[in-house]
Image (cartoon, rainbow, N blue to C red; front, side, top):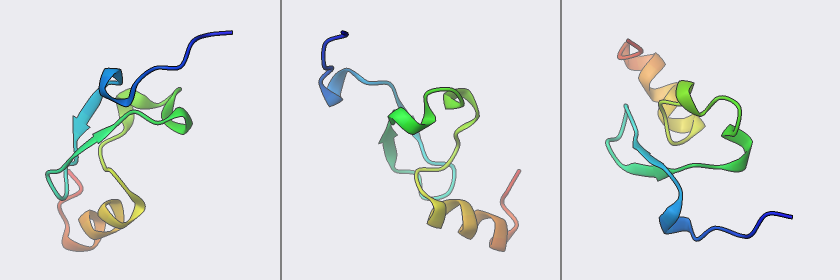
Length: 53
């Protein structure tokens, strides 16, 4: 088994909608390179306001 990692050791990104940093999550393991938003709310807000580019 692999050892637990501290949250501070995980990779982070900055949300394209709100500008806040967010950390890697297990559910994003396979698509981390494609993740741009920290939450569904930010993703939906970006789509509604037309900033989806």
